[in-house]
Image 1 (cartoon, rainbow, N blue to C red):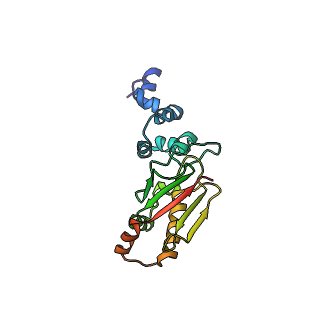
Image 2 (image 1 turned 180 degrees about the horizontal axis):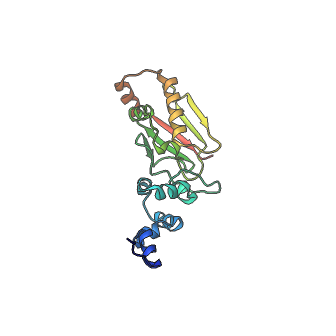
Image 3 (image 1 turned 30 degrees about the horizontal axis):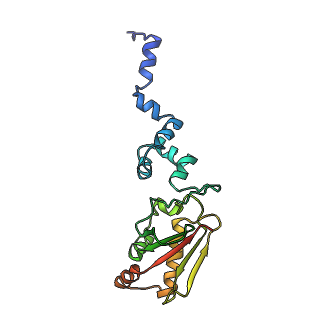
Length: 195
């Protein structure tokens, strides 16, 4: 009993799986990166879950890292605020100098997210595309006493979260009821400076 012999063309068709043109194109990292540059930031974050290739391109592309605020450009003057900011960070747009970010902080949400066992990606994200270096948080009863932190390499949301928790503990102690957190969230602000 003999097995039929296959020609070389028939053997190569059996060995190589058939991919669509889109699969072959998206399998090339540079092409996938160029496609992802035209996708909204939030969707790029979700694309990391598509497959290993997408994850690697988003993780290792310097351009996409800057677009997702995971890396800052030292020479950049772009002062755009990260649109992927966590839910506890509320940017106030009016009434402040161009070198300052004024934000209201939802302490209830901040406290809940600080307790999470798995840290979300926003912990590694920078607040803006250019380096924000200082945050000032009022801790006195009449906002005359401030808690100040400096970050020469740029401030991430994790840095801000740690500074806010430390300032809050200075202001009101480690333990507070949910009602007290809600009350403090109403009139709680932070100023962030680029210089």
